[in-house]
Length: 392
Ligand code: ATP
Image (tube, rainbow, N blue to C red; front, side, top):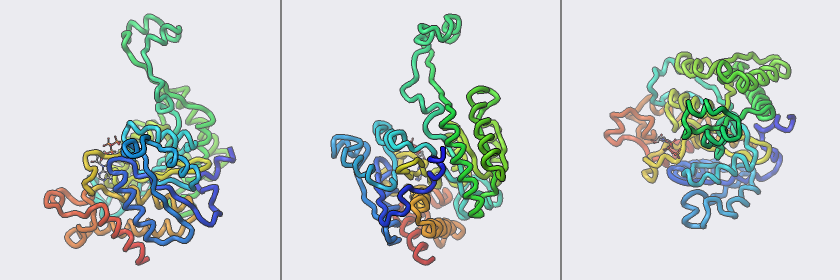
């Protein structure tokens, strides 16, 4: 278990030169990743090298594979990956980054930047800064490819013929797995992050365990009990709260700025983090890091968004936030903090729309501005973030 303890920092933190592989992928992926690389290069960090490599549908066309061998080699020899998005057919890219590299913890921070346009009143969002620690390898998503016809279970004697009659022979089952090792691992990572956030003055040392133990008594009972025990025995200074996921979904909206470090099973974390992102301005504001023992990867929570692909209107902030997490992971802590500040200063432009709309992305301006075409392109936003960074 101690092996897992330090996943929040790269094992190569002392290397003099760290290599990042940028994988734009498909849809808006290349647009937001290129814009973020523009910032990272403009920051002129000593000891950081960035190399872009092909992947996704576009790589099938150009290299005959969604994940060409040269891309895999580059990833294997890197210190971190900055990833955009791939279409569903390029699942092998995600499969390698996630399962192939044992990246087990999906950390999704939710932070409100003043000036962002949201559906909630800004005064309720003051100080909102919390984080989802989503188990990333099992739950419902462990079972990819493990759905099947219910009748095969009847044939194996795992359910009765009466059950089959009730549900009908064409009913489909899906498997959900919660294991002790993965639960302990994510619990420990969440506790570590909770401590880190408190030390940095961001969090209040509150670990919130969210799942559905009132229905999934054994399975989520295991998740809750083991993580609670880890927190109470190994991190006695942390305060622990436990919630049913449905209740917690409403609490995210009712008490927007209460939360701290939320540890949650895979699919529930996927869903609630999208809800939470909406509270702070939408998917364009949701960055993430997917951490493991070797090479972690950093990606926006959104996908390839085909509806806005190629239009250069995607908000790059989610990817820039992911890059800030990556810099912290690689040991560029001060630069990471400065980048966060630069993002904040850029979004704060939203407080004076008429003056700043040229450097605000389409999803952060009100609809009246959108209708008039008054917003900045992906690169306008990125250039503004870099300009703000250089001022600090
Ligand atoms: P995928 O299937 O790859 O997950 P998707 O379109 O189903 O793609 P998302 O990519 O998550 O799902 O996008 C959902 C919607 O959110 C998009 O239709 C788009 O309008 C909006 N969106 C997502 N990312 C951004 C962004 N960076 N900037 C602006 N809008 C975004």
